[in-house]
Length: 494
View 1 (cartoon, one colour):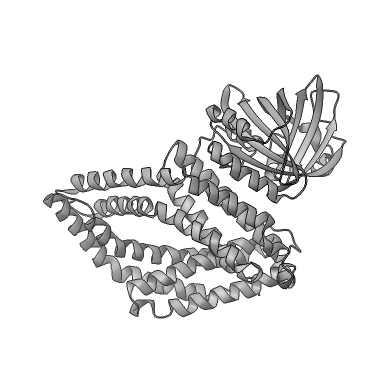
View 2: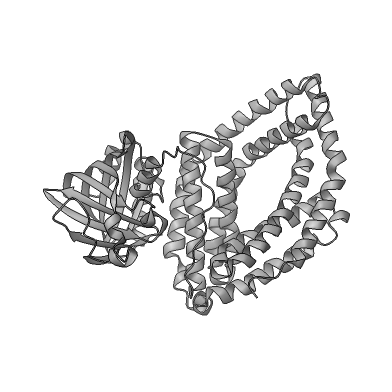
């Protein structure tokens, strides 16, 4: 089995737009192929859990076994011809991934059938394979369509991939995707509908460098952004707005945490666009939270106010408008450019080769983490002292810093003892929850004031705001206690 590193970008594209993409591409010889691939895994999904995909693909009368693993622009790829319909467990790294005969338990998981239009092109001195796939993934009695554009670097500078992607996006919308066909098949087999994507744990190898830690964190966040943007475009739901904003904040926070090894100008350009994206979703998320708070307060009131139904209807109408605006943002050219540019910077930016930053880039991630977490903790301690005597704005600042510390702790968690990490992050979550509730209460009145409400609905809003005001001292007291408990938690990185 031959081993190499596949350098590839994958984009979602509407079926009707594939022809426009091909027409806009540089000239080259075209080839159309029918590809049928069967993906395999063990009954307990050992390959999926290790980030590995394994397929046997049939094309032109022959079969090829392909194993892929890794993330980011470059993935490890191993290919070998096979005689039968099943993978050969004795070739390549498969016998190491599934030792002691575990590969004998491999079974077909799902099938992918696509028509591939393929062209080898020259662009900016690089040789790039352009592939347009249209077909479906099928598992059992379920099926889902596939319509994708792939750009694979065959030779030359990887930056050419991104330059070509920007050009092709002008011909038809291309949405960067971090989900492989394997991932889509796995979701289909699990009968998992298109839904909001929560943060996935960042796994860092022992001995990883600071640069590798940043790339792993950034790829993780970009994958979460891309997945939730797809939900907003296809089947909008409140949690997708929330998770997209979380991912954008995670990436901005990571850029700040890893600032010592990044090129400042490039980093700021990406952060500016991430702020735009989060801001485009702010109103939708704030109104979703407001609706949750109204429902919760109403449940706890002995006699809900008469205008409650009208108030809920007014908030829901505003939510629908704001959700449509968020969905429009992730359909926009600006969003598509953000995703391409951010990925290009993470994978090929100057920060990776800058001589001045070499020592920091090559520093062990665990050592870098210790200094970064200490720095984040000091900032939180400064802002969270005397929470009871501070203003709403000051408590909001403490809440933001608590989030940044949590994001950083989650980034480096895999490098340290799970038990101590969980204890620290758990106490940090408790503080975040109380500070978040205080911030929600502080922003409720201004949000309600922007709505056009009948006198009855306005009276209901006043009653609910009044209830939150009565509960504020208790919330502040719980936040103070949560911070005290966090102070007692050992620093897992020391």
